[in-house]
Length: 388
Ligand SMILES: Cc1cc2nc3c(=O)[nH]c(=O)nc-3n(C[C@H](O)[C@H](O)[C@H](O)COP(=O)(O)O)c2cc1C
Image 1 (cartoon, rainbow, N blue to C red):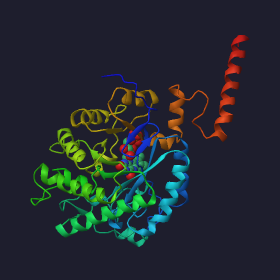
Image 2: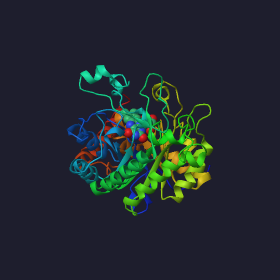
Image 3: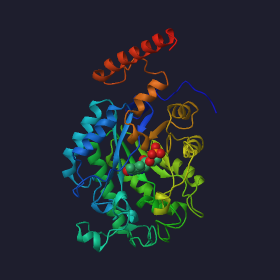
Image 4: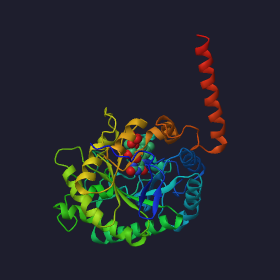
């Protein structure tokens, strides 16, 4: 591993966008919207507090490209122009506090039409419909449910794929119009695009199935549709489940090969996640080591010559800094750690000696905190001097 002068707080320029540091808040669905898919007061507070925390790039949760592409009735969406004003207001707030606003486009495919995680994360049915949450028809590569007892999806036909590509293109145009500067296509975690990539879910024998070329066709078509409306000076990322973590599934070698194709298609960063093809791989409790997906980001970065973002249990500033310094990934994304501590990036700068005087904090906080820290240091010295 090579040490380089690049570190967690080095800027990174991707196309026409310069990120002030390498810390990214990972997309995290909040399942807190009304069925109209519009951000509300909760979202404004949630993203406001995260943007004040000092990340270079701040992803909103995934935005559904169609109403049927939601996971739950409570997801945010970008399927109509009605979403634009509220999303634009969210973007303005994120930008005002120094983070670069980013978003992610999702179609949940066969993992849609479920209840919220804390309400069981189970398929909607007659009982939920009676309470106002009716199920909807889900789609996938093949008519195979994500898990036993889940909705049997409809296999997308060619005309459905054509409509889907139009939906992605329109959603990307709206994301640009709302002011997002970086866009991420969600092709991971068992959602619609992943269900085309993985041989475990995709049993088609037409142009969108079969071999590697067939199974990757939909994603490459989505990238092309998105690139046709997403401005050429704004970066595009793709989130992959780099491995399925299931026998006979998508492999890291597949991800390396796909990354080269994505690079040629105008994608700037591969966002390296894993798993999630079936419900059980999403919710099972497994002990993982810190940064367990970093090796995927490292392999793709080295072998495909593609910038990567590492994500998954990156919890300590020293580890995050080492990932960037050692050239294992270009960006590190923080998820749950930022829910626990929305100021994680500011604390990381302090811990790494990159913010001695709280200069990165909003001045109305930093001015006081610097004095507070000095007073605490003085108190410590005087305690030492008295031998206490
Ligand atoms: C509440 C929650 C919501 C999530 N929603 C999304 C999402 O919208 N899009 C996505 O790609 N990943 C989503 N994820 C996965 C995270 O982006 C991240 O990859 C995962 O939590 C691992 O990172 P962590 O260990 O830092 O939390 C979500 C995770 C959580 C905890």
